[in-house]
Image (tube, rainbow, N blue to C red):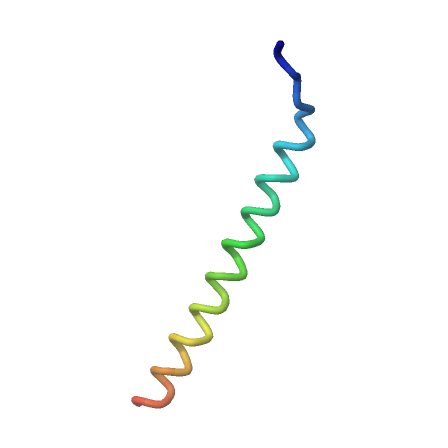
Length: 40
């Protein structure tokens, strides 16, 4: 038995994944800039 999943679920899942990647990238950038701010 195959259950069809709506496309909106996939879109929401990818959107949430994209948001997580953005948050991780922003956090990494802030830490990176803070470390360089301390070393320079």
